[in-house]
Every structure is written in C-alpha cells, then in structure tokens.
Image (cartoon, rainbow, N blue to C red; front, side, top):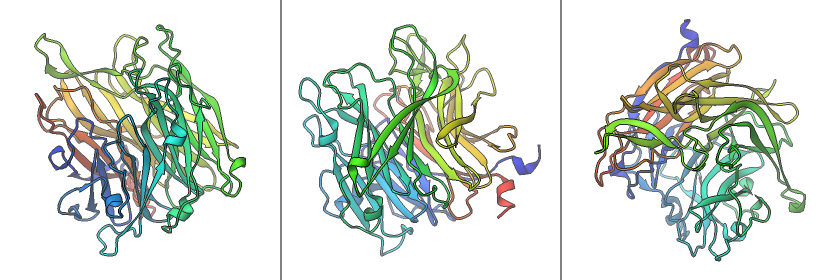
Length: 488
C-alpha cells in the first residue's frame, strides 16, 4: 500500500490518570481537543493542558474541572462528570463545559467557560464563565423530582454554541423520557458580555411527567472542523441513533434521526426545531438486549470471576458517539459520525459503524461502513474526524476474552475509498474487575494549524483493577496521513 494513504502514528504520550483526578470514579469520560498551541484534556473532573511540541503539562497538576467558574466567583458550577472540551476553530478560543451536580432538589445549571486567548500558558489567560439555568426547560416527573440532564454534548456553529442532553426520570431507574436542545449566544459569550437568553426545545414537548422509554435519545450536535464556516444561513444539525422498538423481541433499526435547529436571535419566536429520519443499512446496537435496551454490557475481559465467568464491560452501544464532525470543503459539506454495532448474528462481537452525510439541500446519508476486520475483537467507544484533504480517522477501544482493553485507530481516504488500515495506539495492561463502566466517550480532533494531524485521547488500564481500586490511565496520540502533510 502506498505510504501516502497509510497513517503514521507520530507520537503518543500519557495524559491524566486516576491518581491525578480530584474525584476518582470508574467513569473517566476522557475527551479533549487540539488547539493552536496546546492539547487540552478533560477526565471526569480534571483539566490538564499539554504543549503540542514537548508534550509537557502546562500546569503542575491537573486543575479541578470547576476552576474556570470558581476563579470567576460563579457558584453552582461544581462539574462532577460529563465534561466537554472544544476548541472553537473559527474564533481560536477554548471552550469547556458541563452540568453541575446538585442532587435531586436542584437547581441544575449548564456551565460554559470561554478562554480569552488560544494560549493556555499565557499569564494573561482568563475565562469568561457562564451558567445557564436548566430547571425551566427540564420539567419534573409525577413525584415532582426534576428530570436529570444526562450526557450533555456541546457543538460549535457559526450562530451559536448548541447543547443537547437527555432528560432522565430519576424515579424510574433513570429512564430516558425525552431530549432537550438549546442554542447559546456564542457571539456575546466570546466577548465576555452578558449572553442573550438561551433558546430551547424539547422532544416530546412538553416533557411528560410520566413517559414511555424514549427511543431517539442522546443526540449530538455538529461541531465545526477546519476554519471554513458553514454557508450563511445554514442551520445547526444534531443526529441520534434509533433504539429498536421496545417490544422485548426486536433487535434492529434501519434509520437514524436528524434534528434541524434554526435559531433566530432577533425574534426567538421564529426559532424552530425539526426532526426527520434517514434510512441506513440495518444495525443492531452494540450489546443490545431487547429486555434491557439501556444496558449494553457484554464485552468479555480475560479476567475471570470466582464462578469462572468473565468480567464484562459496557460498550455504550445505545447511542452515537461524539463528535458529529462537520467540514465545509467549498464543493460540498460533510458530516461524520460513528457508533458501536453488533457485527455477527451468532456472537456478541461489536464493531464500529460510521456514516458520512452530505448536504443536498439538507443532510442525507451519503455513505457508511462497518469496521470489523476480524471475527474475535470487540471494537467500541469510537470518535471520528477528517482532515482538509478528506482523510478520515476513527479512534476506539478494543478488547475480548483474551485481550486486555486497549486503544486502536483506523484511517483511510473518504473520496478515494482507500483501504481502511488499523493501527495500534496502546495495548491494555489489565482488566476492570470491579465495575462494568468504561468511560462514556473518547475524542478525535484535527490540528487547526496544519489541518492534517489527528489528535486522539482514550483510556486504558495499566494493570488489573480490583477491590475498591481505580487506576485508569489515558493516552493521547498524534497520527497523520502523509498524503495530507505533503500538500501543506
């Protein structure tokens, strides 16, 4: 295979580990973004930035995730998980966000902080810190308990930052009963000004006090890659997976959900949210069980329980994984998204399904493929992006009954449909024996300077985790295709 279409793993280095996190949990939520000068990583409730050349950490120790808000005197932003890091490529600013954790009584807030500079090592760095009240858009169940705003995701668009989250009923085992979509006033937030009120929609509307299991949960917003803005007037889009009919029997779906959010800041009454379904090749969500549609635990680890059965991990197969990576090539607009699916009818083995959407005149599925180059390895927790020449990269976790959970990636050229080549990033050193949780997501982004180099972060265990121990580590990797680098 020509070198130009084969990825080079340029560097890997250690990110945050559990011992550095001020609030250790099994759920690492490792994600991050690459900026002009640093890579910024979030795990659970910790932030650390790394120099892009030396990989040296910028701060002596990871900062508590709430730092951008506490340093500005903003209360009720005790981020306790589900944090997100973005690099706003159009404005060249850092964005960190997450919801607070107040308990059942609330109040709930979504907290967003924007850096004043692209340089996290600058002595002039400050954060414009905001909090948005979620109680007015959350609703409550029949007992009066607020719905829990779970798995919030944020995306950068020309006319706003766009937020989505699930509404979970805390008295029904945290069952998904709907979703909420909000537009935040990016223009004023970038200047540190008071933002206009966020505009939100829910589905169903209103959220029912006692609802059925919602089958379109966990949407993710489009997030701009590169520096070419979407065309003027282009709406923001979200996508979500479709859960098979909850009838105790059905195993497959053959559509995905597309959400179209038009915001009108001058006349909020003219803002709209639309939803349609796009046909795709039939799929079974990874580790899906018709009797337990929200449980996707089935990945066997080498470690054995006392009864001789394997320990198992959750592949989070019930939803799309961030990001919905958007790139405007001028000649066309492309969205990429991925998720975990079952790949064989006679086993639970999982692989990575990806889709590319093109706009004509609204996003439609242009192509897709399932990555599963063997018959034994489970692949899960993906994240996808593409460089400015149309090379794509997906990073993900791997593992099976003989292989400790590790990290790999696949690269190829979308336009030329070149062979998909898998590369190893980090071999696992142990199994998680004391929990089934393996984070919630990972993160693939593209360097805004050369617009070629992919930066990916995910978690692994250096050794077995037993008892009450929590010992996850994270690995950050740089990879690129020479075909892109040679064009710069």
